[in-house]
Each structure stands twice: as C-alpha cells, then as structure tokens.
Length: 254
Length: 167
Image (tube, rainbow over all chains, first blue to last red; front, side, top):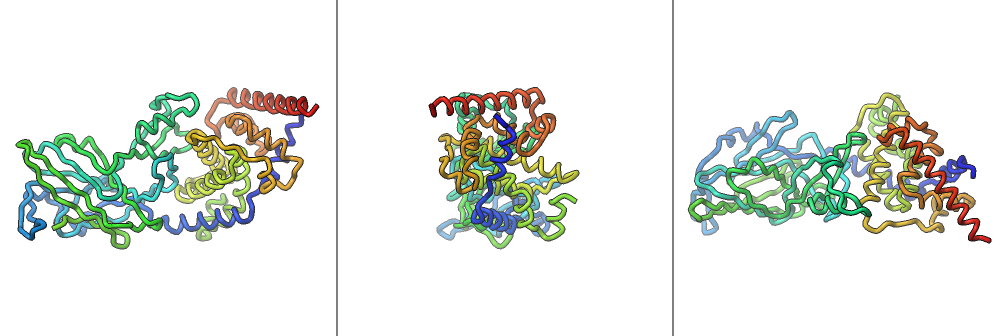
C-alpha cells in the first residue's frame, strides 16, 4: 500500500465556501465582542468611600420601614495585579467594571453550555455572632475556578475516561494550554450554596450571569443573602444585579 | 513575519487567517472527528483562541504547529466527551472532497483510532518528522514511531479485509 496517497486523499478535502464564510463571520463576531467579554472586577476609585466595612447598614424593608441589618455584604475580586479590591454593597449601587482578562476559548463539556458572563465577583459577609450564610441567585449560578492535571482524574470508565469524573466534579467547562498538562475548569456550584461564617475564605465562588448572546444580562438578577446567627435567628438582604454599558451594578434592595 | 503579526498590523484580517490555515485545520479535524459540524466548531474555536490569546511565535512554522496543537487537543477533548461517537457517512465525503477515488482511503483513515490517525496525518500530510510530531503532541518519539507503525498496519489490514470481501 502506498501511504503517500494519504496526502493526496486528505488534501483533497476542503471546506465548502458556505462553511468558510460562516467560520469567517463567526470569528469576526466573536472577535468584535472580545473587548466586551471580560472578567469583571470592582473598581475601587469611584467607590473608595464605600470600602470601609460598615456594620449595621440601614435599609428600608419591604414595608418601607427603616431597619438595620446586623451584617454587611462586601463584593470583592482580585485585580489583574493580584490585589484584592473590595466594595461594600449598600442601597447605593456599587459598580463593577470590566477588566482585561477574558475567558474566551472555553470549551463547553456538557451541562447547559455557554451563555454566561463569568465574573470574578465574590461575596463576603461581615458581622457578629453569625453561624452561616446562604446565597441564592434568581438567575445564573455560582461557579468556582478549578485547576487539575490528568493525575487528578479518576478514571472510572474505560470507554469514556475522565467524562464521569468531570460530571461527578460538576466541571462544565475545560480549557488547557497545549503541552502544559494542566487543565482549568469551571465548576458549577448551582443557584444556591451555604457556607459557615468562619470558612468564607475557603469558598472562592464567583457569579456567572446569563446573557443574551451579546454579553447583555437578560434579566435583573436577585441574590438573596440569608444569614443565620448562632442564636438561631436569621436575617435576609437581597442584592439586585443589573448592567449598565460595561459595568455590572450591585445594590441592596430596599 | 508570522501571520499573527500581519493580522494584528492590519486590524485583524480574519479572512487572511482563515484562507491561510482554514483548510489545513479543517482536514485534520474532519479526519479526527469524522463529523463536519464538530470539525467546523473546532476550527472556529481554534482561531478564536489564537486571536484572543495572541501568543508569540518565533516563525510561521511555530505558528502552524501551535494551531495544530490547539486543534488536535480540542478534537481529542471533543471525542473524549462525546457520549455518542459519530462517524461521517462516506457519501457525505463528496461534499468536502472532489476526488471520489479518495473516498475509500479517507473512510479507512477516519475509522482508525484517533491516536493513530493523528500521527499519520501529521507525518504523511503535513510532512512533520517523528521528533516534531512528538513535540506537537507532547509524547515521546518512540510513542510516535509505534503509533505510525500501528496506524500503517491497521490501514493495511483494513484494505486486505476489504479486498477479501470483494471476492
């Protein structure tokens, strides 16, 4: 058998003109939104006044009464240079602007696929006598960045090695640098999660918000923050997440 | 000057990029995935990764090897996680290959295990040497040699069986 014929056979394959045009068009579209498809981090400058941790934030409840919650919510993220930026969320809106990194090139591995703006925004609660916090998103989900190597994967199936492990780990997206042997994934935490007050630092869960295909948030997102105190009482505050041009806005609902 | 430099210096000439590397990547992806839609997706994703990551290349060969690495990794991932393996109908090949005398060979090639067909493609189609393939696929040179040898054996075997069946 003449193996040189492989070249002749394979090089006879060409994309159809329609496919070629489609690829060009799609790449052009993705590139054109590239500058908008960015991780979002808090910008400290405009909201420096809010940086101080505020205990007992006054807010209006649903009946219009002024109440004082005994905890403060802080949105935070790491900036590109590794510094942590914090913004305490109040009834005045806190803006979180676009940064320079992006997550283009992510490969969907199942689940509900793309359609999410992956922000770097995390939430933290400050208060006294707090036992646990439960966050619940009306739309979207909490996600966690994970890094793993092939050695970490438990091969449970000969037919589809790794697939079951990814599903069991709830890792929906995977990307890797060629030759690095290191994979970056995004773990789907879900719409809600509960964390004990003293272990907040262990859980680096960020917000993934559904968009309409053009990186515009489809609907306003409400995050319910329910705090349970050591004495068994609980309090709740709601955060409204909206979008304005290149910023995502977080504010407490009155 | 690599294509990347040309691309960025001319405000992103997507057309030029696809014209230069599109068919080369599509051929590899189609043979590896045996599915034209998946192949198209991988080609598209590879270019998007290229544009957004904008890595630095020493020369055009380095750039080409990088694109092949990205595309083959994507193909491997896609096959690994596709629960239902798909195989292209030989009749569909006429949409992408005008030479009908090649269909038999392409069909045999597409039915090989991915690890064998990727080394056959890189060696016989793209002209890479064993050590270059080892770098692109991040495997040892002896593994490349074994896969080449096994790939050739499998192709021979399939041709032999086909000929036997014809009689």
